[in-house]
Length: 413
Ligand SMILES: CC(C)(COP(=O)(O)OP(=O)(O)OC[C@H]1O[C@@H](n2cnc3c(N)ncnc32)[C@H](O)[C@@H]1OP(=O)(O)O)[C@@H](O)C(=O)NCCC(=O)NCCSC(=O)CCS(=O)O
Ligand SMILES: Cc1cc2nc3c(=O)[nH]c(=O)nc-3n(C[C@H](O)[C@H](O)[C@H](O)COP(=O)(O)OP(=O)(O)OC[C@H]3O[C@@H](n4cnc5c(N)ncnc54)[C@H](O)[C@@H]3O)c2cc1C
Image 1 (cartoon, rainbow, N blue to C red):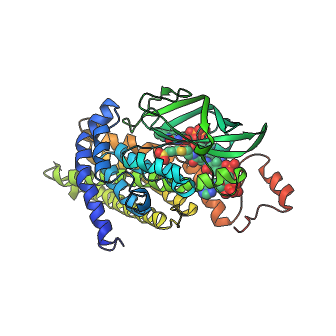
Image 2: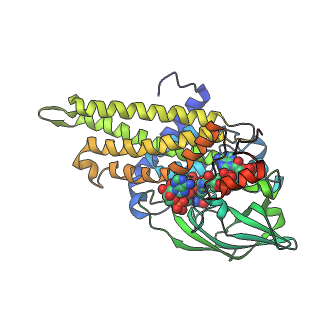
């Protein structure tokens, strides 16, 4: 990274510390990938070094780092081991960001204690029949006295079976009526309790193999009223406020993609200089030089978008939704191109599991899907730049016409 990176001395020092520990992550990344085991030992070291809970405010025992600080750490770990990079994302952004913004004192204390000790919270939104159309979720949280009873199923929950803190999105039912979407906090203990939170299946995945992706079932799962995460604006606005907090995790996902691409690119430059054919370093062949040049441009462009999005975070710690979506679309698709090109530079050796190049390529594939697909996020970008709601359901525009008497101008907040 150049000296025009706009980082403070402290941020460079933080990045360098992360880079140093990430060397250990690099050394175990192939084994994590092969075994599919969560890298508990690395997680402990990351927690001890202060890379989990980095964004926790000082009053809750953390260092009060910014989203950009967290992104610097995430990029370094992702260059080495993207599973560790994703752990750094969720231990600093997403669910924990929502809790720090909207939670009660007790909820903040609970979440801070868990992530500072190395927990990677799980965010539970997606369901078998509600992926991109997340607001169509069917999981319900029904009020019964001073408790809430959750029933339903979630899928592709990152960390299912290893995460302790869970932020569960569910349809709120009070007095028999649907009120909106709310967030419910559940802590799974080491014995796997509460019993109503069932990790029913680990989903075999293409990449990021040390990170469990799981199906969860909630069967009469009881949640005390003081574990409801109440965002401002009431239940009707609940989904909007919770997904606003999720913009932090979108920037985090974009950063993992960036780190993967940057890591693969560095390996490609090294290989191009080290390998000779036709009696000369392959780096001298213009065909490869231009490929590497394009990769460097793409990586720098993604980094600029990621840092811009991270810097856009307001007082609540949530990045701007447009900047987050732009960074995520570009970084996720760029990572697929760059990791693919880097493997090409390595030739057959890149195709072998003896080298990390094929892992980079597999690991990079998810970011254009998870956390909002590239297609869905392009629609979000379009909505923001056009200043218009662009409903995706068949009757969406009819509803806007009925409600507003005109086609979808976004109301100024
Ligand atoms: C938002 C969508 C689910 C589309 O659903 P709808 O058409 O029903 O919703 P909208 O009317 O567009 O929005 C409802 C509500 O939310 C507010 N909103 C939406 N997006 C944002 C945002 N990015 N930032 C802030 N606020 C947002 C919107 O203004 C409305 O607010 P009000 O109710 O008016 O106040 C769909 O577009 C979508 O985002 N789908 C993707 C789902 C997704 O990202 N899932 C992630 C699951 S977790 C994960 O994958 C983790 C992977 S990882 O490793 O990080
Ligand atoms: C590795 C991984 C980790 C994940 N982690 C989590 C997690 O921790 N928590 C969680 O809740 N979820 C998680 N997810 C789920 C993820 O958020 C969803 O996969 C994602 O939102 C897309 O949903 P879907 O897979 O059901 O695809 P679908 O919504 O079924 O989409 C299928 C295809 O249709 C396209 N499409 C759908 N709607 C539109 C539209 N309106 N316009 C244009 N194209 C459209 C999509 O872009 C996609 O190409 C994870 C997924 C993966 C792969």
